Structures are given as structure tokens and as C-alpha cells.
Length: 249
Ligand SMILES: O=C[C@H](O)COP(=O)(O)O
Image (cartoon, rainbow, N blue to C red; front, side, top):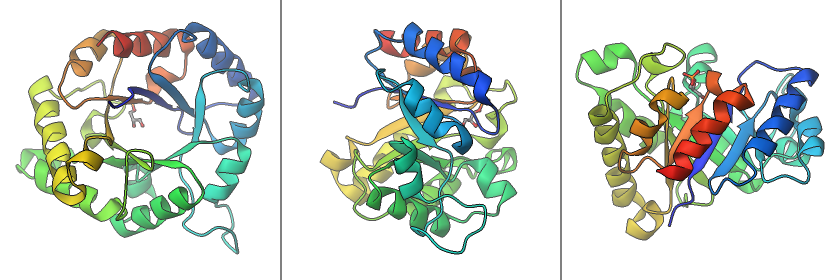
């Protein structure tokens, strides 16, 4: 049985004042059965970990380097994230793929580093609008999945987040049929590569303009085990109802 996961990606948002929102989220979701994961900027991780030490909310990074340490100015290793209190790390987000030219091979190497450091890698895949309009959605997503997940991935080491690029921060959401098609295909691809038992333990998240108002419909889709939420994860008042919708699904 896959435990549902409500994950929040704060992206490049949040200074010390945002820690109060985390505390409010922990309070508002204290009865949640789903895992509640927040990925704040790296600068807030250790303070967030201190603030949440007695709570069920887990923490993650938004990226890591593939190396453990070394001459990589400005980068953060998986081990450092773990040391700061993270249990997970988002990898291959489309904003990293677009802004930093990250390839599937780099994402995979980072995921291997995350696993070695004991972090769960939340690996993002998703098509652009152009891909979708050209009928290439499944090809693109399959190829990213194949290239980005390490061999030997398990339900403990990876989570896959399907995030159509055109739905991120735009208020546009795919139809439930479109989400169902991709999630079903992701599950089948995982089964082909890792076998049924392992594949069925890997959680699949949907991400892209998830809000309390559309969460029920999205969470009713087969093989949607939760969400990776951007904008609506910044405020406890927005994110707690999404977590509640996930629990109710
Ligand atoms: O990682 C989260 C996604 O990019 C979704 O962002 P959004 O909920 O603001 O559309």
C-alpha cells in the first residue's frame, strides 16, 4: 500500500518569517494520514528542521549536486541536505531542466547521490505545451522517466512527479483523462522496468496548478498518490485543505 504524499515546493520563496507558516501547517495537518513534505529553500532547511523537530512534517531540498563534496561553488550535496534535516530532495524539476540545462543523465546521477545519502528523490517529468500539441506527451515522459531513474530504484528511494510544464504556475490543469493517461503509462513503464512489486510501491504525484478547488478531482484519478504543489504550498491555509482532500480520496 502506497502512503499518500502531499509535497510542497516553495521554490525560491521564503525567508525566516516563513517558518511561522511551517509551524501553522504542522498544526493544521497534525491529524493527516498522508505524508506532508515541505521543500523550502536550502537556506531555511536547518531552521525549519529545528522548528519542526516534534512534528510529523518532513523536509526536503529542491536540488542537489551529484558529488558528495568538492569544488562546486554554490552547489549543495545530498549529504549536506540530509545533515540539514532533509529526508527527500526534488530532482529534475522542469525549472531546473530549463534554467540550468539539466539532462536526464544528470538527474539520474543526482538521484543516485540522493539514494547514497539516504534521501528519497522526488524525480520530476513532464511535457511542454509544444510536446503535447505534437502528440509527443507519452514519448517525452517515458524518455525522461527512463533516463532519470536510477537502476535499482524502489518505493523508498524514489517518488515520480508528473508535472506538465504548461500547467506549472499557470492555473491551467490537464483534464482528469489526460492525467489518468500519463499516470497509467508511468505505472506501466515502471512495471516493465522494475517489476510489479517494486513498481507498485513507487508513488506517483501530479503537479501543476494544484489547489484546494481542484484537488478532489485530481486525487480521484487512478495512480495519483498525491501532489507536488508550488504556489499553493506557501500558505498553510492553502496547503492544509489539499492535504485534507488527499486524506479523503
Ligand atoms: O513543484 C511544483 C510545481 O512546479 C507546481 O507549481 P504550481 O503548483 O505553482 O503550479
